[in-house]
Length: 199
Ligand code: APR
Image (tube, rainbow, N blue to C red; front, side, top):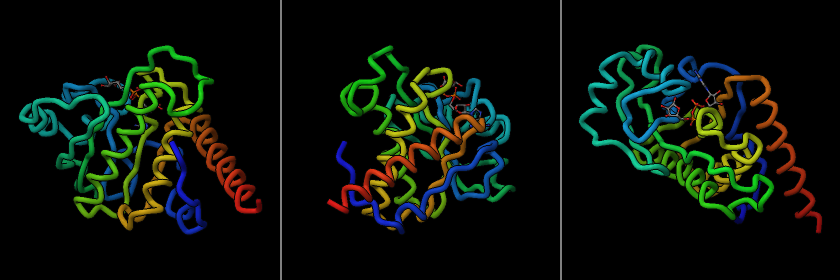
């Protein structure tokens, strides 16, 4: 998973917040869904509760979503909070691989990166300027948090380096622990990139 040049303006287009993704002031929120798209627990449950029953009714017409892919829907009751779209993506269930293996070396890594890529593609296609992501797959699906954060940040920064939209990506972490993991991962990456530039 090669990284693109990490210029300062790209880093300024990401932010880490700790909170509830349904409360974010963004154009779109990403849902960590399951393949049925009919709701569940975790962030999926929170988004369906906040969007209201129309979301499930709408999603029944979609025929599901495969792992690694994404589907965009209206935000229904969340529209009154200014959220225009919900982008549902289905992350991989961590298959207990070696969490210290090189990034990108296992299928779960590739599927998780695909979730971020698909959501970013849909955001660009729909002209969405600000998008909030939860920590996809790191709850019920058991993906190691540090590994998932590195994949998320690497892929999002790589995308932003080559695209105008979305203008801003928020990593919305439910816990302070998760927010600290993301901030640490971004800081580590910035240090690594600046050391490369000095060579
Ligand atoms: N806002 C932001 N993040 C949240 C919220 C919320 N309201 N609620 C939970 N989270 C965080 C969790 O703390 C975790 O860091 O979202 C991350 C993803 O965890 P899950 O919601 O469990 O999602 P995931 O691990 O991808 O598992 C998906 O769980 O809820 C079911 O239907 C869903 O079957 C699917 C599976």
